[in-house]
Length: 253
Image (cartoon, rainbow, N blue to C red; front, side, top):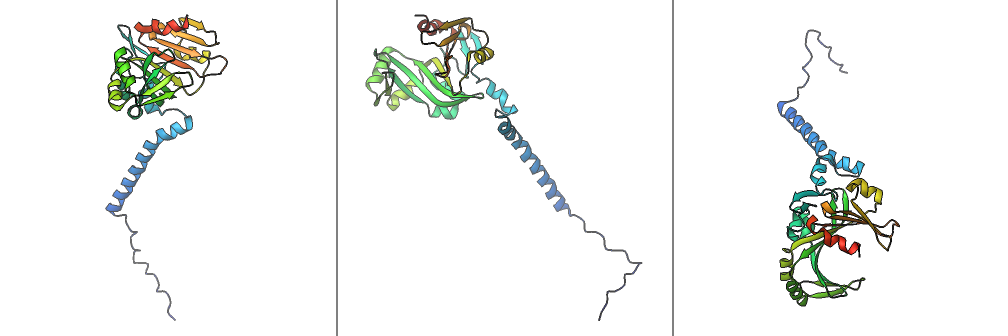
């Protein structure tokens, strides 16, 4: 029966195996990759925990917030990245390219027969505020009538109006019409106190017979309409300040 050979005290133990250069490089690369993954995921994780935009995105998204209205002089402002009274409807694609690609353009004929050119972005994210955006275009009456006569579909609306779907060529032309007004319909409700906090004190406040409250900001071309009873959501209407009289007139009849 064999036994283990005695260890010679004069013989040094074999050296510990060394990590090869290739393996060290691989470990360094793996560590770098993990660091990059954590760095890239951090803003997303922050957003999920806080329920708002990540810090890096806040600066870019701030210009799209509903209360970020920049005066440009000559009776014009910029809001949502566009200038009412100057830019074409299609310019909204600078702010929401994907949504603008799906933008629906139509004519609305009211019960009195008046035609209005409108475009719709069903869902947009204005900074951290989500809502629906309706754009109103300006065109000659003869052009609107021609588009109406060539409409491909006529859809009745609850208000008694009709929505007319434009044929493709007319819709492409309509996208170049001048942006006359914007209406933003936030998905969330807020009261007058929140509106004053975001938009500041209103130079004029008008109450209507149906109980709604309208906050008027002539220098910014803005009217904020609220329902204190909570029956409806806020409505934010924007025009060029030089056209504000047109926005105010229906409220003081």
